[in-house]
Image 1 (cartoon, rainbow, N blue to C red):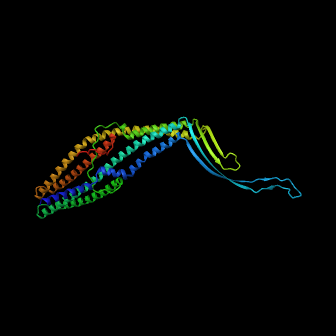
Image 2 (spheres, helix red, strand yellow; image 1 turned 90 degrees about the vertical axis):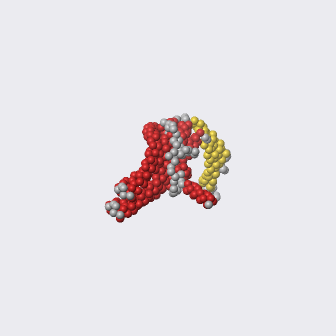
Image 3 (cartoon, helix red, strand yellow; image 1 turned 45 degrees about the horizontal axis):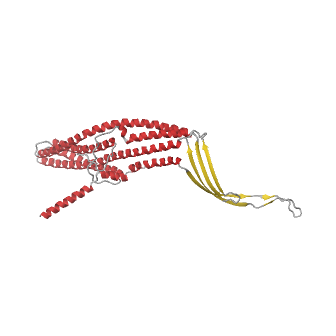
Length: 435
């Protein structure tokens, strides 16, 4: 007997463990999103793109080395004017046959810019600021996508709960219809009670279909982020937000805009310096396999200065565009700071009242469940009318859904508050938000 009980306990434990493993958690969904979400993959490519532009700007400080190999083909056509020799019958020019020649040559050269009035330095600094902006942009987009995942994951979780509640409500309406018919046969109620119960039960079954469709839609939304169709999911749990919330100027979005503004200023400066002289040096070694050339090896060393005289105002236009971007970024930064200040205050207030909302919703759910039980018993005994049963079922349905919504809303607020605080929405070792 003891062995049988022990075996049953082990089987129950293993089945419970297997069920728990099958549940997709929010942190696991985030790990899947990091690997499969196209939006996150696109955001991560912003940084390599900006680093490539920085590498390109750095090339101005390094020597430019190039080689050339070519083959020249040309025809030589020449002749000699002969003196007239009447005895031999020669009295005209005798042309020689044209000859062909192919001349291969190779050359290797190096050019180094010594001084360009600071234009290359300004462009490199601008590219470096763009890398800084890209780092903050990647952080900001990752945070936004994490909050979006919490929202979509919570939507899928709520849709599953709505389907569960809809099925329980339909079962309650079916039971109410059964009791109403039984009481009608006993001449305890009018047929109006049976008719009302039939209508309510039919509506409840339609709501089950509607909830099932909602689950499918929310599943596809979540699959678009995590890269696979989800099954059963656990309740969303987000790490607790920090107690200190910094000012909006610490948000990565604002820091990125600061870097973009500085990059635009430096770009405008570089375009303005493009009209100043640039000094360079060039060395070249070449070899030409030409039979008519005495020196087949040639060495050239050139030092020069370049000064653009007219370029159709190309650099001038680029400078104006960079200055306009600088002004635009400055106004965008101001708009961001003002919007984030309002968001910061709103999210902090929502976080403070969310715990009370969860407690109230949980109490209401328990009270309406108990009320439904009592009303159904009294209706079966003929102590209350059918209207009380309908109201009790509706109250329990709304309170139960509100309880799930309040819990998910608190998790979403926690994610937004972490985003406002400038800390990762998901992190290893984070403590989940308590119920």
